[in-house]
Image 1 (tube, rainbow, N blue to C red):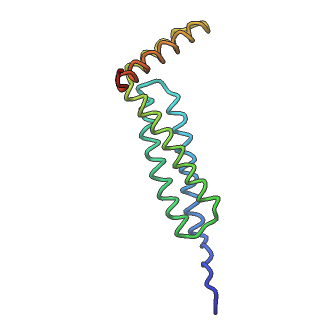
Image 2: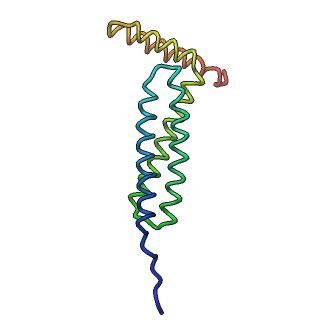
Image 3: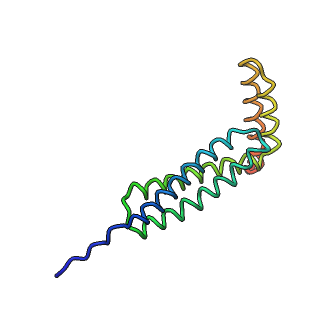
Length: 138
């Protein structure tokens, strides 16, 4: 009985997978940078994170079909997980746009540590008011 082995990946498959890997890493960096921008530009992080997820899925499919090593697969899966995290975070900031915009304006104006802490406390209090909307009252 002869045992079948998978054919070795071609150089073209390796180059294509490496290109997708570089694109995913660059998109992740762009997502990280966009998420640190002030609010009107912070919305771009959601679009870039979505693009990262799509490229990660396409790259993962190509890697699995080509039978490339597990490090490629792990990297694409991690890219997909990280892009999902950034997508959810940026969508949450977009949903709470007024609260986040006020928080960013407050922190830009805050000069002292106590002013920064007051901004953070106000922000968390306002977010908790939204949380109380969804809780049933006893």
